[in-house]
Length: 386
Image (cartoon, rainbow, N blue to C red; front, top):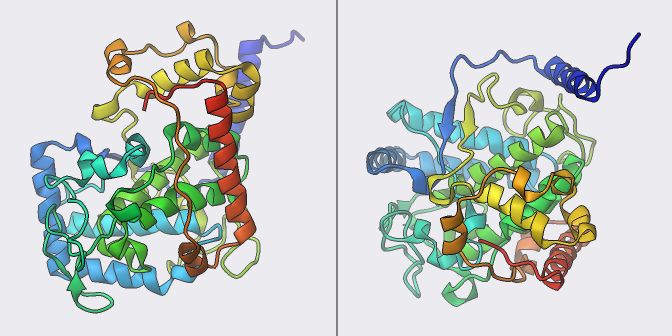
């Protein structure tokens, strides 16, 4: 018998892996799939529709309900492997309510890594979109789509934000560092803590106000933020970990695909694969405002980093061919964003760590990893296009 060629062998391996993954799937494939867009890619009419739905949901008490639900289950859905499946189901639940008002409603995401250097200057946080910081003293938000709202949970209060670092939040986490997680992490326990103790936490902390509380869904940024985290989880899943679910459950026992999602009486395996069951959505792969920068990033990493640094922090990218064989680059985008060194990111506050009862050693591991990453990139002379 002749041996399979390398390409046929690779195809056979891929098919075997696909069949193994499909064997896990007991949910029917969706007859149609809608796309969750990056928020700044919404057209004027789409944004008008979205604001109308959000206002109706506020009027009818849905912001208060989701704030209550998140607050009530707070201890069960953070610091353990319930984090991603619960929030995927939670954002989907929110989106489903919005569709009752208008079936065209879709929950967008905010790709916060693109705005990580100076978060407060993000277009997302301007008056035409979500609005900015609250008014000094009361911290009541005066502009944006939730301006002047009175939130009902835990009691009537003005919708508030109190940006960190005296209104000018410290840099968040770079696209490069989050991409490094996606390439390096090989189990859910590590990926979950890497995301939860970095990007997840600093966005909540630095937006502040309602976002700093257990009832953070009072701020619609919560849904944008967790849709983005769900998108990152999906990117990690399709990178070879589609059915990976391990680590601790909220009670300390080992979690698995048959474990029920906290609050929701359904097993985790029902939400693991987008495009199946009730998870009939996908994510836009190339937001309008930053098209092609993902391929630009791959090219830049390959051409800028020594092989040992590339292999350590970006093992998948290290296996790619030279830049000329990678996806094409749009030169004007690179020219319009001159490279800069990656700054050290913000860290979790002790208040936030205590509030969630996080394991301090795990938090320290992630924060040290982030510093080591920035040091390695800067020592190599890397200049980020973001």
